[in-house]
Every structure is written in structure tokens, then in C-alpha cells.
Length: 265
Image (cartoon, rainbow, N blue to C red; front, side, top):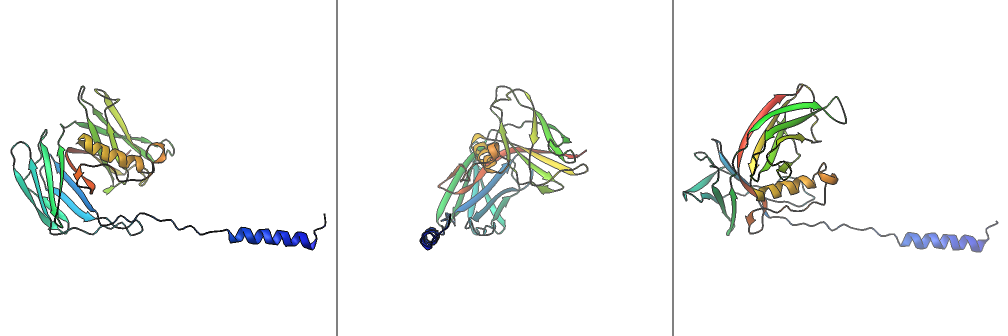
């Protein structure tokens, strides 16, 4: 079929109209900045108990949170009523050394900064023994290794766990959190599936096992679901629920801790 001048004119007009309808869409990302970020831990071992304070930054900025200095940070327990004052050891890091967390006590954190008081409470659960770590070839690459931890979950008791993994001294970014809804009273073999640091034979792997309360389990489990290797490949990021009031980011956790180390085979 021979195209006439009229046909060519119609085609050019259609292309021009289509091009004129193209619109650049600017994504309006939330810029909820300046919120207080609390990272507080009370553990059952000798050493500094630490609370870190910072402010969050814009999504588009580098992930460096400015420290919050000059705050008043205290921790009390519900049994003795002792009030512990944490001192600022470095900008934004508040510590106290002569204090060891005790199982079954509820600890309350108070942070006063910028004329606002923030509070959070956490109960320290009983410790569950981490028996051992083992390694095996990865399911998808036999050259790589996967680490598994083993422990006996106490029967008839609600338990929640968080695991922190280090490969050759470097903490992996993956978040590991589980409970005993389906393993109550059973011997547990928990695979640490992570994808940001490859593990090979000869590497040194350390795993810290934390027994945490239900509120902090919800916090860490929500974060785990948001990561790339979370269930279903991750979900839409959001601020996980925590135990801090009024609204702030982060967590305050009173938990037992223990670690095991292996040289991967």
C-alpha cells in the first residue's frame, strides 16, 4: 500500500501527540528526619551496659546518624528500685560499668533530651544454653558454607531468640529472630541463612545468642521480614514496633547473652 501525504501527516501528528503526553514523575519520598534513635542493651554479663542515642537522617543521605549529646540517661529495676545513671563515654554513647542484668527483672530506661523524656521497659528472660555451632556446604554453592546452631528449647515456656553473627570479626547485616511457637520443648537446629558475607572453609564464625522478651522479638522479627532474604523475599520497609514512648526509633532490650565460635570446615 502506497502512503499518501495525508497518511504521513496523520502518522507524524500521532507521534507528536504521544511524545507530548510523556511526563516525568518525581517520587516524593518521606523525609521524616530528626527523630530520636535509641539503641539500648542491658545484659546478664559483666561489662559496660550501653545506650546509644542519635537522630535519623533523610532517606537520601548517607547512613550516618548524628550523635545526641548531653542527654540524661537512667535505668531502674522493678525489684530493688535501684536507679543507675549512665555517663556519656563518647558522643552519643552512654554507659555504666558496675551493673549486671538479672533474669526476671524488669528494667526501665529513661532518656531526657531536648526537653522531652522518653521511656522504655524490658524484662530479662531466662537463659537458654547454646550448645554448639556446626557448618555444612551451602545448598546453592558447595564451595560456600552455611552455619547452623543447636540448642534445646525449654518445654512449656514461651521463648524468643535473636542471633548475631560475625564472620572473621565482621558482623553480618542479616537479622535473625525466631521463637518456639513450633519448637517448644524440642532440640532446635537453626540455619543462619545470610547473603552479605560469604562463608568459606577456614573462616572463623562467632554467633551471639540472645534470649529476648516478646516486644523485642516483634521488633527484630519485623526487621528480619524487611531484609532481602526475609520470608517471601522481604516486605515493604516500615518502622518496626518497639517499646519506646513517646514515638522514637530503635529499641531497648534486657536480655541474656552467650556466644560460641567455630572455625568453619
